Amino acid sequence: MTWIVPKEDAVTLGELHGELYSVSQHDDAHLGDEFIRRGGRVYHPARVASAKPRPFGQSESLTDEQDEELDSGALRLLKRTLRSARSFLMDDELKLLNTALEAAGGAAQRLLSAATGAEDEELPEPSELVADSATGESIVDLSWHPTKNLLAVAQLDGVVALYHVESATWDARVLEHPRQVDVGSIEWGKFTGDTLAVACRSGVFLWKVPQKKKEPVLLEILKHPSNAPFSQVSWNADGSLLAAFGKGSRSVIVFDAIFSRKTELQSPYKLAALHWSPTGEYLFVTTESGVSLMWETLTWKRETWEIAAGGCGWSSDGRCMLVALRNSDLLYPYIFQDCPPSIDAQISSPALEFAEKELFSLDRSTSAIVGGKVQNIAWDQSGTRVAVTYKTTASGSHQAGTSKLVAIFSVAWQPFLIFTRSGLLRGPPNAGVPRKLAFASNFKHGALLSVAWSSGLISFHPFYLQDPKAP
Image 1 (tube, rainbow, N blue to C red):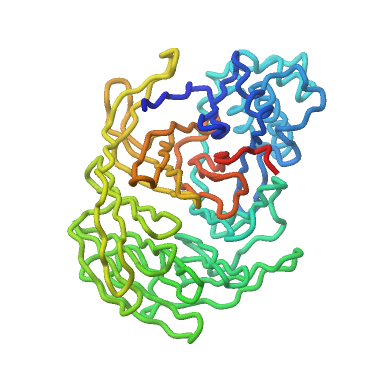
Image 2 (cartoon, rainbow, N blue to C red):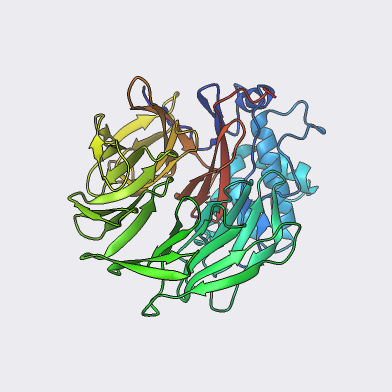
């Protein structure tokens, strides 16, 4: 299957009936209307700003029908963007308006007049606004609650915000502490009573987030034996163990939440990232050297794998681990045939080739380099969709760096494991490049992918693997 590049001014809504829907500002084919008519829901982006999390058009819904029966799906999207710009202008955030104008192109003046009432004001050319539209990085990590449609968002300033996806609102509560700085990662624990772990310079902060708007409680700060900082944290399957390490360190600290003790797993190499299997049976750790480490968690036996792993993603049942090589365009699916204390991992299907190639939109107006070195891998709960971000080299008019597109693969398990190119996902206009990927833990009709962009936006893309109109 050949990937089709979405147009430069398009945004991907989601997948419905096996097809990714991307709409541009003109949307001559009325794809946005079709997506909604067939049961799809359009999730508008969310945006965080410093310690005050604020939504991107929080009070608006892209499925409202008031005064919009004649508008196409794309025009509805643009109107929401411009209405959001109006509310943000009250806070002097002109850069959002710049983004909206640049996205709207020739239709900007008419839509802005409708949204703000400024019918007689002369608008600057989009080219004059580009210089001021750049935004800084603000999002560090994302983590979905295991049972609720609640997304925790860690920010560079050390604040963790909470976003309610169904209502498209930010929680008034935030998780912040004077010593919670230099946050590296966050993760909700399963069966831990709504506990969120935050890895940062001072240790691992364990926050309990009660329901019914009660204030979050800082339960404990887990410290490194040598008071070193932590950069990544990960829970095991039942929330009884918590693994954490500091980037560049040579040990993983495993905290036992039941017996309040900690164990240090030594490594001969500097560590880069850890990936606990969803079943909790294996702990895979990549290093800064040309090897990776695998621990089984029954006897804590360790194996050294001679692979320089980069991105890694586990299937939700723990049967398969997809590993991208750091200096290659290949991804290897490792199938686990047994259970601990055995570490019986086999490559039972061909490596997935992800070589760089220039691809085009249907009308060939837009091109992009697709493929390269994989950075992040996210695997959905159904086990049938994989999202990948990647970095390309310079080629012709295309610059080197992280691609603005997210590659989507579909996965079939029978009669054997096979990965198929499914589509390419593009974020909102001027969103930047994707930094973090995370699938929701609980989405009724299939999978819901959240993407954190370098501009500070978070976009949401549903994958309807079942009929969205089904009860």
